[in-house]
Amino acid sequence: EMTSSLVGSEMCIRDSPRTGRSLMERTIIICNTSSMPVAAREASVYTAVTMAEYYRQMGLDVLLLADSTSRWAQAMREMSGRLEEIPGEEALPAYLESVIASFYERAGKVRLKSGKIASVTIGGTVSPAGGNFEEPVTQATLKVVGAFHGLSRERSDARKYPAIHPIDSWSKYRGVVDMDRVEQARLLLDSPHGSGVCRAKAVIVGHIVLAAGKLRPAVEPAFHLSYLLPGAALGDGAS
Image (cartoon, rainbow, N blue to C red):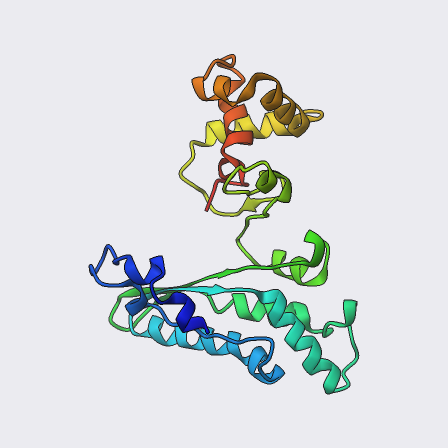
């Protein structure tokens, strides 16, 4: 099923800028479905990160995309229930936070004996029911990751892509955006009803005026960052 959906897709057709060959030749997919045994669904994440570490030891830079860790947590909940362990919040295992932390902690750079630097970068998605960021999996993830991009249904419905919410999202990494402009955006957003003012101005003046840069010079850069470029106002910059 997974193979048939990928055949003829953009990922199969597009060439790697580094090798000129298909990206699928540099891609490994560890797939599990809801119909698979619960043990297999739980083990798939560990299988993927172990393979990523193997290629890192070969001197490669590896990107691991885990979609989604919420489904992984559900598999752990089923396993915990069958083992008759004491449940935690929402019947998830009491050790959920430590398991999620140990998974993300396996990412990072290493210096090999040859002196070469290799790395594993982990990008995990969380799909909380109803978009509730207060549920256990999301909160456990936020405690250990270096950046968080929170998607907004409101921005998606308004056809603003990427639909990343500038207030909910943050990053611990310094980005490419000039820090003076980021500070301007922070001052605007920290002001009373800052985000509401941004939204109201966008409705009143319209996107044509914003695109033409007709706002006052002191306001336009911060407004542009905080509303039109959500990634620019994330913590220390977009990662």
